[in-house]
Image 1 (cartoon, rainbow, N blue to C red):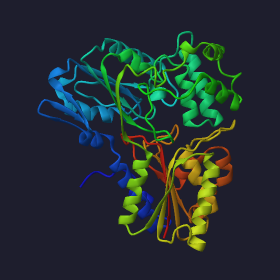
Image 2: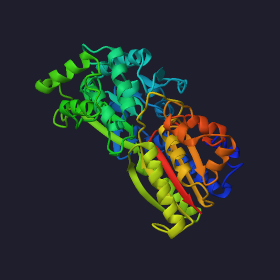
Image 3: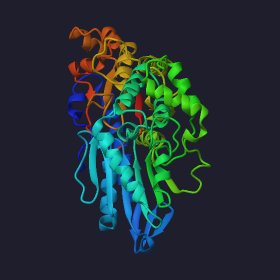
Image 4: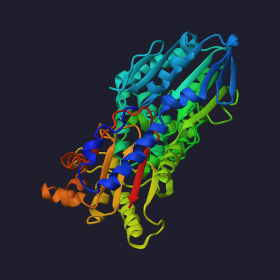
Length: 453
């Protein structure tokens, strides 16, 4: 029997609505197992004789001079591990940048670690090594680029004139203000020397295969080998929208101002990358995860519905809305008749106040929902980050039911105060309701489940 992904399952099933929790956690376990990047790469990439297959793509290995493996992101080393086993000594060299504490030793690919969600010097130095290999690539070479969520923070190389400290400050402000991941990445691409398709230009004329696990609500390919659809104008608008334009370092503002009037500084668009031999392959995304959850819910005998794969909004407000949907199902049996599961995917945001405790967007969503479903004997709501980490914590997410608020009162926990102070982890730890998976080796944003029995 395979090892369980949820490490504290027994603890989570020891209280509350145990039957509903059992169903919810079963769906989560199945979903995470289905989207395991290592397994997906093993199925999608195979060698038969002298031919390398990547989905429907074919490469004659006898005509390939060098194979390089590059990439970054939370769980990217899991993807690289599969490539290391498939390609073996056909790999010339490779570098992967993994989130600190999640790296692994591979035979032919060097795994370096960097900071996330804030970039650091280690990630900066590792990115310089990636660029060195990219510049070596020539006609007849094959370069695999492994891209997963977290790549934008881990693969950091500021544009000339901008320092690492400037990038760190800009990222900090973006993470605090409540900007969406797409907005944050737009700014990152326009302050980077390697993002937004620029890496592909360095690798040219070698052939590129981008293996991409999408963690953006668009569901579309993204990363340093994908043409950018955002502009300098978008970037300036985003910074002004969240009132941080004057707070970001002057070097960042100066560069963005230059970009507004100098088209040569713009990130590569589709037309700019036409000459490059790029095959970008989406191997997993949030929709695949949601479909896996729906399939498992049906197998368990539940009416199931994927309500959204583009979930966004302030975490606590989304939690309140989802609690309202759950109560509508319980009271009026719509939009689904119980027993049922409502599945949502996406990524909410948390706008931080001055007083900040420990938590993440998934735990904050679940905590807000717990207050609104108090007293229900049929509702369970959970929210997790598919990478196994919620915000800056090592917690995947949280699970709540109609008994959660009452159990909290018994422990003198003021849910509203902790919600206001973004201190959801403290509440969930006290109630033994944190979901622990450890690093999952994938990252397709978040999965939210509403189960009504």
